[in-house]
Length: 245
Image: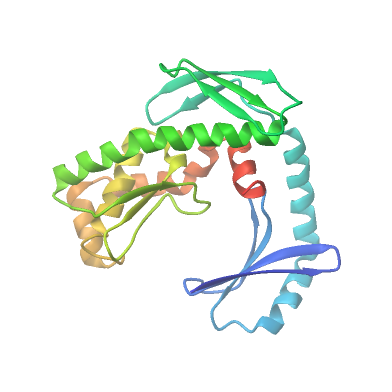
């Protein structure tokens, strides 16, 4: 179970998340998303304010650093995708008189033409380009891996997720994060194997990991990579994902 709440203490605001997977209470600074307090299901709510107060100096320091980083974020001159090794140039046009941004992509994807009223609108349009490309590239690969492994799934969807690279429902529906395009192909393939194995075992039991190893002997290497791959996602993308959504 997960539950989100927004609260504050003097000048310090935070988001409270109740998670059945959490073993203990903790504070974390979300990428461009402020302070989050994660507590286990049975953790007393009345203790949360005290927990935040105890670590308030640390939280304010980290949030101040985050604010400075936000001010330094700039839009890219090109989009580089680790998934297919492509580099696509971006051309920005001044269109401050327009209330809405428009994104123009040539048929060959050789250049992305962006017209937007401000940086926020431009970054949102670039995220849209990423999502559309992910919808074009990721499902065919998932289908190929499904055929190779004999692990069938029901449907696939592409989303911009903040914490998960992918997920599988009890109905065999697989969701893939569009940010996978920033990762190396072999790691993306492993993530797909990981989710396809959940169509047989909707858990992380010994039987599940045995099946994963059967289809990807080097799964431990890719698990470690996935845990370290958030730094491959550009800051402008994360800022729009957390602050703009």
